[in-house]
Image (cartoon, rainbow, N blue to C red):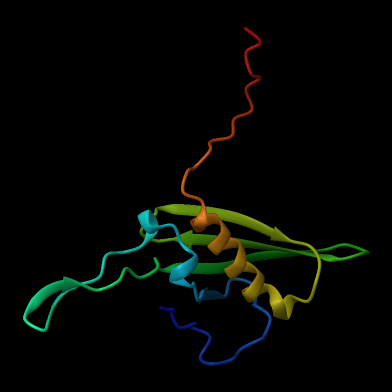
Amino acid sequence: MELKATNKGKTNLPFAVNERRLLTIRAERIAPKYLIAGKPTIQAGKPTIQAGKPPKVDAQQVRIERYPTHNARYYRIAIETVSWAVNIQLNGGSSADDEERLQDIVEELLAIDEVVEITNEPASLH
């Protein structure tokens, strides 16, 4: 199952600053706990539940910083049902490929079944 992009069919175009797009996420790559349950239906006289669908994922380009060697592009990704907001910086490659790269990053994040929290505190040696 895939979500449609909100860029009105314009594929492979770079994001504009502050532009928001829905990302197309493949449900088969997502850990089951992140899928949204489908609606109950009746098929062949038996109640069944449709397969889960991926959460709504929204990407917004926040800003671009220009450097002599590259442009750094900053994005804010909001994953609706999981209540995650992730900041992502892309440095290389074509800006026209950012949407595809962001989709891959989000799919990788949602494929992880366990979330590991990273802190700045040093680990205890005892």
